Each structure stands twice: as structure tokens, then as C-alpha cells.
Length: 334
Image (cartoon, rainbow, N blue to C red):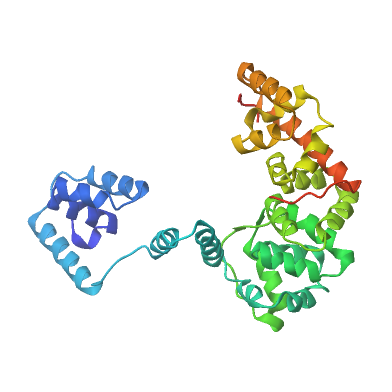
């Protein structure tokens, strides 16, 4: 065994063996599982450490201490913990989203600082897929404003493409950067980034004004009815009915029989249940309460299907102009 032939891992193994079990255990607390596996594998091959090797390893360690003197930190972890500790859940989540987006790829950060109208002007001549990809990387409020300013004839197409995006490779980002470099000087990203998807377009559409979300979904329905329906389900859910006024809620309840309503309320929040009960007769409310207590296990998918059917009734009444809805964003037993 010569110091010149020892690999980095072998030197670590020698050092830790010489420091003893207690110190090694402390060091292991700071290492990953893979690092520990590598070090312990190297340890298992050692049965004797010559004194000269021990002294040289310690000497090398002291030199490294001097060379790298200072504080070693995991900056990314520190930043995330600091953001998580900020006051206000909404602000903390917003800052975390911005931080994670910025650390995954900085290629589109300039877009986030530009006025939505200006961005829309830059993008309106681009292919809808390129526009969709760019909007997918932006915060939902900013993306919604940009989408609002895009030409009407491409809005639905862009929205649909956002819903179909999942991940984007550095190659694709690089192509986008090349196309927009002269205007905004984008920088290359290095890792695959999770962008787009149904949740992304739901967030964007929920923040659009002047009922543009309705127009976009109607146009999207011509291309992919199933996708449009999936987006609608996430935009307005059964629990969102709690925000309706009594008159609107009573109008919906008149279209639903008690058995269906009981099933839908199986997993409803207590607030939702009480809002429903307050807008029906005391006798009917008591009957449903009794039925809920006596109801055995049912499939979650059956309950969700019933809730969706009630939401469809609400949407139909809205289409007929009888009420106005707001927007919101398995088989196990329940």
C-alpha cells in the first residue's frame, strides 16, 4: 500500500479507520447512502495500515483543511429552508416556485421580467408549440396575461399544447434560445424541466379575464374533447359550489335526487355539507345525514363521478344563463 496508489475513496477509508468508529459515524451522517457504500466497500479491503501511510494521509488531510478553509454549505438546501420559513404560506409557495424554476433553468428568466403585451408581440409569429413551451415555463399569472394578448386565432391551440407538455429537453430549450436570442438574449438550460401539463393550463385559464377561458375551451373541444373535459373538471370542482349564493345552489339541487346527492357528499368537506343542508328542507337534510351515517364503504371513483355529474348540471345552468359560476383550480374505498 503506497500513498501514491491510493484513490480518493481509499484515502477517506484510511482516514476514517484511523479516526475511530465514533468519529466515522458522525461523518457518515453527512454522507449520502451511495457515498457510504463506496467508503465502506473500500474499508472492507483494508486489514493493515502502515504507519507511514497513516501519517501521509493525515498530512494530506491537514493540507486540504488549510486549502479549503471556510464554511461548507449546501446552498440550495439552505435557500429552500429559508424560503419555507418566511411568513405567509402563499408568499412562501410563490417564492419557492420562483426559486425552483430559476435553479432548474435560467433560459427563460428574461421573459418573466417583460411586460405581457411585449412578450405576446414577440411570440405571435412563433409556432404555437414554441409559444406553449415558453408560457409553460412562466408563472401562471404572467402566462395568463401573455395568453390574453395573443391573437385570438392561436389562443386555444397554444392552451391545448400547454396541456400536452410534460418535460422539455435542453436541446429543445436551446433551439428556442437561438430563435429568440436577438430579442431577449436567453441563456441555455442544463436539465430537463417539468413544465406544462393539465395543471399548468388550468392555472393559466383560471386567471384569464373577460371569460376568455370559456372561448378557449370551446375551441379546444373541437380538437380534443376529452382534454377539454379534463381541464373543465379541474377548473371547477364540486367543492367550488360552496361559494355559490343560496339561490344558485338551490337551483342546482332541484336537478339532483337525494340518493345522488348523498353519494356526492360522502367525501365532501363539512363546510360543503352544511352549505348544502342549509339550502334544502330540514327533513331532506336530516334524511341525507342519516343516510351518510349508515352508508358503508364506496369506491372513491364512484363518488367523484357523481360529484362531476352535479358539476355538469351547474355548468349547464350557467350556459343557459341561469347562474354564474366561479373558477377554482382511484378506486380506493372512502
